Length: 187
Image (tube, rainbow, N blue to C red; front, side):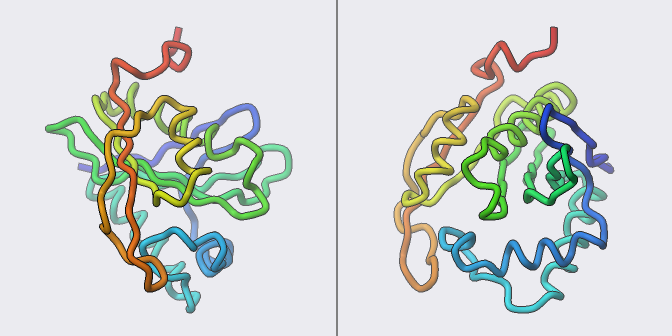
């Protein structure tokens, strides 16, 4: 089953499928050691990794297991980062949310806005019941984004990954359809 990657818009953002032209921007984003300091994989060291990311996004869409979208600022088309739903399970009506933003775009509410738009699509179009996300316990900013859009911290995965050679814990967050903010639902 193919899951069509959406084009979504908000007041300030445009979420769209990735193109081959995004590889340089993705490489710049994922090779930044500061951006990647809480990820469970090291910063990218070769541009080919960005090309594989775009290919994987298309594969995930074709398999019907998720959708990742590039985020552009509507006012000037600047690349903000990406947001995505993966591990979509139509039987359990669940998926996992992830996002990564360019460091220059932090602190403007873009992650919250993009994730909110993608969640609206997920609950309305995919009829999801649950969306899960994880954040390194040292990443308070990501935890705040998730809590702003209605996620509840459900627990801690102790020493679940190694980040830059350091064992790290992750918080698990969940958002259930019935807890999705009423203001997020269409009229």
